Length: 194
Image (tube, helix red, strand yellow):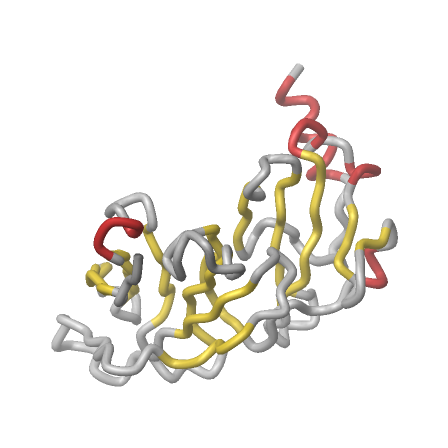
């Protein structure tokens, strides 16, 4: 029966609609909603957002879409929460301090193939996203000598790997690029205050 439900919802999406959840998905802090981020189908790499009550994820009629000002039941009213982003992950975190209003972070890369990590923060899953910029001082690199022209991409955070509250440690990974590369991991240490 569970497989039938999955088929029902995936078969109901049309080719010209965003693939909500394909960019990333996150369970909200209060676990009431699942937030599903997806690229617009126009290939501009704009990211739109849907949410669904966590206990009704298979019911398409329960989905709501961020329209720039609030939540709408109409998908066509979706407005981007991020623009020109190729890959990345949004996650909730206390990296900004337990009392900080900023509870969501984004780490990823833009769609311009510049091989740079982008970092941003927001108070809510829909944003507004503040300070999405290059992580300064982080030198991305490739270990493969045979494809020096390829760009670095697929930047993802792994907040589960270290206790970010204790030391401000966050592991990120990226792809070396090309078809023959590997995945490289690096530990970022953020300055924390108590």
